[in-house]
Length: 74
Image (cartoon, rainbow, N blue to C red; front, side, top):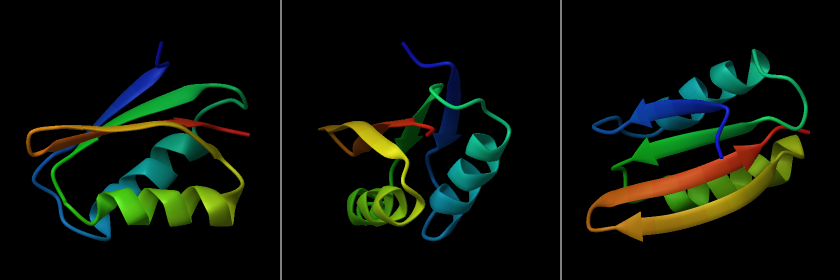
């Protein structure tokens, strides 16, 4: 279960990533940030973000036009 949720629906690149980065900065290692986004490019963006920052992309799924992600801060 997520420790914090970020609603990034309606935001386009790079705003979902920037808001996630800011939220993760305030979180403790091991905590999970859940993100909801509508930007179709967010899947690649969050994969790259996690790869570059070392955070773990725990979950990535899609329901209609809404994309769901869970990132564990390391």
